[in-house]
Image 1 (cartoon, rainbow, N blue to C red):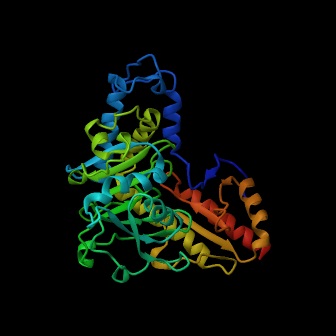
Image 2: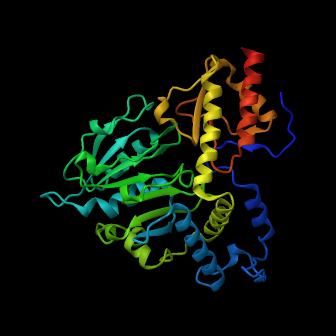
Length: 377
């Protein structure tokens, strides 16, 4: 087995690994943050007023960098919120389900369920609107053909999870609802692959995601919403969760997660130094291809997901002899390969290879997998 000669590679699904140079920069600025000119302000970011000039400069730069990276059009608002993707499962229907109403004054939304996260979204939305199942993947190993979706004419939006973290399923292209005869808005939960690839905003009304996988530490939730979708929140929607209120307040209706925004801002700058989203997507394709090639080329490991919708970010794989799972994980930890245990609901292994995981990390993992197979096959 390989010896531990470097900082371990962390394959956690989230909170996930962050770029080392970002962590080093944050450590150096922890006690005394410097502005763009290098002048120290005498306090750390966690101690700043969210309305002070120091933090406002951090916030403004972070928002501008993110808009540039994701090519967010001018008619979309970027909101920095809290509560994670699970909270958005309630906040989205509270804001959007009433865009259309039936004769009884109730809103409705369609859901395509392809894994655990979209399943949770479907269940939660049912508390606030008529949540309807448009399609459900059999065994969560594929994505139902869009032409087979049972879309409802009264739906305000269609919800998909464009990357399922647990089951390792990803939409490699987003559905065009207009070609399916739907006038609903497309809502995407892109928590686990945001900033790993480009987004076709022409197809999307709203996108949301927790930051703790590809953007920064836990605590920050990103919402990107088109202007004309603001202002339709249900009366019972809490003010702090009303997108229009948050937008009018520039994400400062309540105290925002200041340190998480700062850390995400450092990640945005790091992404720009790497060449932006196009460069990251190319790197992610290379990493995923290497890992899947190792799994598929072996009789020792397997991945059950249909090949045309395998996730580039979250790669679940299984040992055909599950009795070797503990030995595999123990050896991986010894080799400096951390957090490879699969989600408790599915078992096996899972390697989350987000932007911060370099190709060298995936090379180390595949070398270990081949070594383990030789030793135990």
